[in-house]
Amino acid sequence: MNIDIISDVVCPWCYIGKRQIEAALALYAEQNPDAEPPSVTWRPFQLNPQLPAEGMSRQDYVVQKFGAARAKDVYARVSAVGVEYGIAFAFERIVRQPNSVAAHSLITLAGNTGSPAGLQGRVKEAFLRAYFLDGADLTNAQNLVAIAIAAGLDRTKAEQCLADPESRKMVEQEDQRARAIGVEGVPFFIFNGKVAVSGAQGPKALLDAMHQAETAAA
Image (cartoon, rainbow, N blue to C red):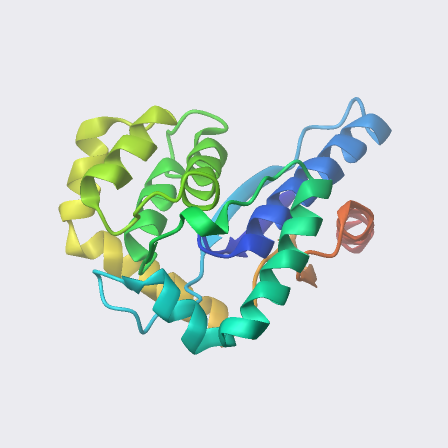
């Protein structure tokens, strides 16, 4: 089974969605001990494609997006759900709201043919953790490279990727393809190209979608 997950590294619900698909995959493995593990591919999506490469102040971003009063309620709810999945969101540590294309280009690189199994998932996790738990500035190229290589990506390849305009272009094109098929919010899960689930719906909903995709392929 192939699972495509469209998401953004600056989306807290995408981090929760990652934990939910991990739980769903564990349940699937329990139910199908002899089956080959599904193949997961992380696809890019930008919540804020309008942001410049240098990003903007996180405080200004939050006020513009939600308003100061509503933001507290929004992030309190996200934080509460995060606790259920072992994610200790530290929104107060985030200083910069980044344009996420550069991070996506490194995640895409980690998923290229020939990369070690699981590398893309580890790089994806590293960026989510760095941003939401450590408050890392993802507009800083040195930070991006350091996060990627700590997760297992080759330094030279990572630096070349960030310096290559084509890498950014490929991410932007894939983002546009996602929007073209109707993706408006993330996370967005596609199972075997047949069954889709929008949003962080929980492990059971994702497991049900996996079963539906298998039935559709039979």
